[in-house]
Length: 124
Image (tube, rainbow, N blue to C red; front, side, top):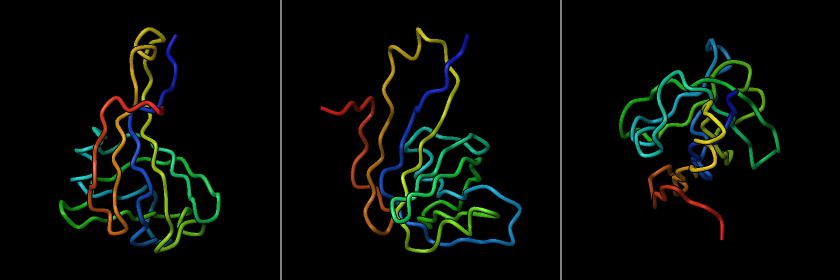
């Protein structure tokens, strides 16, 4: 058996664009992906702190250093430029692996620049 767990979190990122005409997915700056340990094609859940919407989609790697977070396709109706989001990276692991892990949390400022990275972060 495998369980679906959160392996990484981009905390309070700012949506830089929303493109309804695009096929789908979320575009995330390569720098943010690397810091979180996320990869292109990986499934994520995007939670909108501005309106409580939640969307599950896959990652597209954005250009390094552009600090972009772009919701593409249908979620562009629920996520707008300037919205604050929490992006949760998912993985399927065994229960034994899940018991030993904690997500990496990448904290960003209002322009999606990394403030701090906490690996194996657990709330106190």
